[in-house]
Image (cartoon, rainbow, N blue to C red; front, side, top):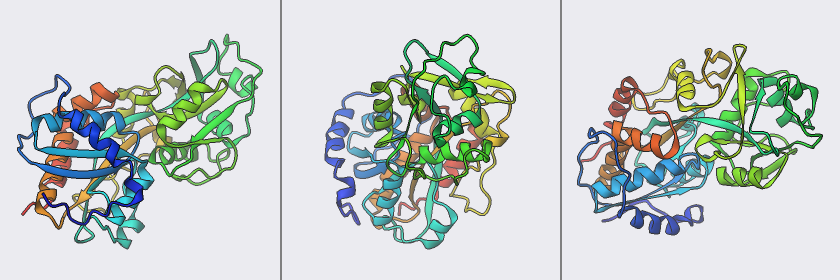
Length: 367
């Protein structure tokens, strides 16, 4: 089929590799899940880039979707959210995954090259904790409050046996070893989620504004979620943040909330999001959460990633529109959410939120 407005620019040069993975994904699909996913016989090929946090979920979604729709190919390349948003504006991705929605200024500026106008659909479909992970010999977990985490990443706390850490971890033999904080080198929604947490809970320590770009020259930079995880895995004394789906096997930080230390889990992350409102002033097909980590209720995990699928209301090619719409519907379905939970440990969206998400997806014009 014809794919219109797809300029195969360098930003999605890795798509060819994912195309091979997409073909392989047609051969197998995850088992289980409910049967509520919309039946579809769409066909064709669509290109997507974006959030590396969604990588495990996207692989599982694509495999299951292509098994149900053998004529369809969905190529999702993990580029990071910032590159994904740039690609959508440039017109080189039919849809994207992003760990944040476009902000009001970006939407007002418009110019979404993937679309025939400036009307977009943004739906939250992936809720996951952002793990604060570390590598220390013989230590699997640590308790830390927000001010201490902020001090570590601001470069104020530089040694693992610092009193700020030791006082929260009685009985743990902390080494006299330098701390090496790792952050993302690329523009990242995961990074913005993390710096939003630091700004909200420790503004006296973390004096920078929340941003998807790292504001400091200290620490070590790594590309993508996998780059951060690899750096921590290979560096004793390292600490960083990453989507929890890719941080297993590393030491984990339990974070102080309302006087208790909470370890990450899908349920605890979901509790934070459930207590958060949708942003005001957006269209009915633009569903962006206003998550405030400083207002995290007791028992919730305060660094929760809400990641989005972003597409057009109007595409030049109706077949592209139909395929994007069908894929979004599958991802949002109870089956799609179960597939993601099994593959990536994410928290399924609630039935109430699914109703809003499906209504937003319905805005995509297919005729």
